[in-house]
Image (cartoon, rainbow, N blue to C red; front, side):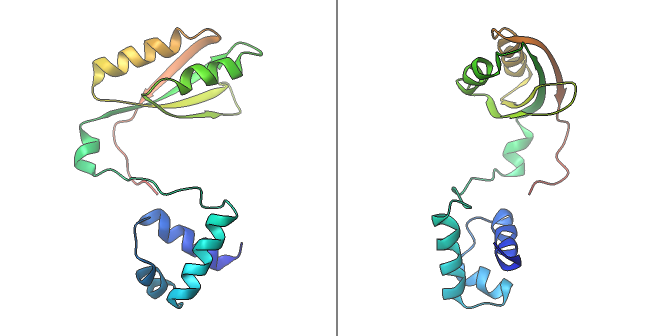
Amino acid sequence: MDDLDEHLLARLRENARAPVAELARALGLSRTTVQSRLAKLERNGTIAGYAVRLAPAYEQGRVQAFVMLTVEPKQAAAVNAALKRMSGVRRLQSVSGPFDMIATVEASGVAEMDAAIDEIGAVKGVERTNTSLVLSTKFDR
């Protein structure tokens, strides 16, 4: 992985649907060079897939929160499995510091978010939660 690959990945983070020709122009490379680099990054697993980025108008109608969890010792795997089954939990990360995990949760409204937080708190192995609602997103790469 070199600087060129890093620049290519940065462009893809901005727009994963950018045509190869557009990426090549932006990076000052030939189309075949960009195509072969993309193929290599996909083959070696650096690029695992491409994602959908939602429009701000759609996002404004949604409620998002970060739910910090304290988990009972040796229950991390069970908590992970339980939260993975919850459709509103978009991401679960283990972290250092006063909490063991942070879940990114998305819901269609406040009532649905409240129910999701209650469901997370009721999972066997979750000792405590602390939730921060997202008020706005300043930028998203």
